[in-house]
Image 1 (cartoon, rainbow, N blue to C red):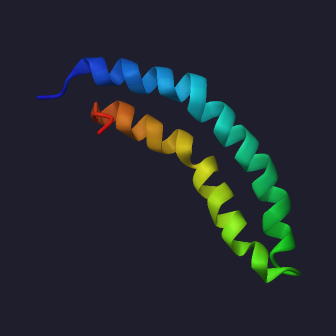
Image 2 (image 1 turned 180 degrees about the vertical axis):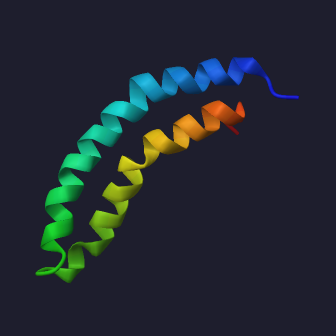
Amino acid sequence: MKNPLWFIVWLIVLIIIAFPVAAFCAGWYILVYALTVCIPGLSGLSDLLLQGAQFAHYCAQAMMDCRSLC
């Protein structure tokens, strides 16, 4: 049985943490990803920024599943 309290916790995390992190990472991801063609060493950074940009999706999915934090 799913606990609706986790829905509220994930909603707060989504609004307060995930949206600003995703917005910051998405902007930098666009710039860094274009430079990975010239500088292949930036691919690790671009992968990290992509994960940050997808953090809002992860939180929204956890919110809909009422998944616990641990």
